[in-house]
Structures are given as structure tokens and as C-alpha cells.
Length: 136
Image 1 (cartoon, one colour):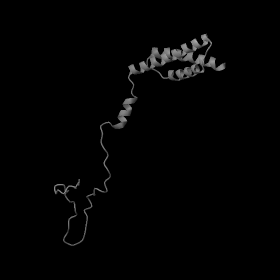
Image 2 (image 1 turned 45 degrees about the horizontal axis):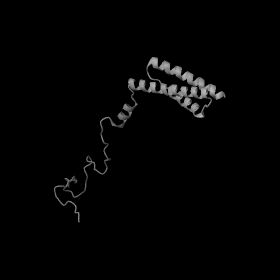
Image 3 (image 1 turned 120 degrees about the horizontal axis):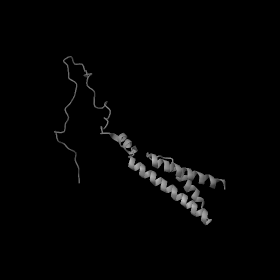
Image 4 (image 1 turned 30 degrees about the vertical axis):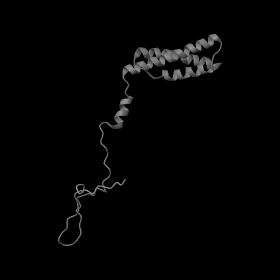
């Protein structure tokens, strides 16, 4: 199979050749700029990537509350695991790591005053238990 390029005359672009003057000297119009010296034009988008990144950073209050409740539950689960380990006499070293990671996540606020107060109390309890376990 042979593929041949287009040989149509309809695709020819109009020439922007300099005009000749009667004196026989060559001159180029200084006001025109060749297409080769122009750089590629930037693609214009509505909003762009910056707008998308900014929108991802915006949290609605309901989502922040949901995340705060989730972090609080994880911390309470880690405290329950600690309690079960202490009562059973089989405290796993992974429990201390869970408590530390729960304490790190509790530092983020939820934006709601009542929930932030509860999360602060849970964080305090987690920090106390970490301090007790670290001295052993």
C-alpha cells in the first residue's frame, strides 16, 4: 500500500513576501514578524491547574467534622486496645505505636468548638498513656 501526500493547491498559504521596489534593492518590512521567531502560544484554559488545586484544599465543615469524629474513634479504639492488653497481661508493642499515631492525628482541628474540646480531652488521655508506657 502506498500513501502519498496531499498535492492539492487549496492548502497553499498566502505568501507574505516582501514587496519589490523599482530600485532593485532588497528590503524587508520591519513591522512584520516572521512566524518562526514567534514562540509557541500558551494554551488558554478556564481556571487552570491552580484553580483545581485550590478547590481540593477547601474542606467543607461537614467533611472536617466527619474526619474529626473518625480520628477520635480511632484514638478511642487504640485506648481500648491498650486497656485490654493491660488487663490481659499481653501488651503488644504495636499498641504504643498506634497510640502515637492517633495522638499525631488528633492535633488537627475539626472547626467545631464542642468536638474540638472532646478531641483535646482524648488527645490528653492518649498523651498520658504514652508517657506512662514510655517510662516502663
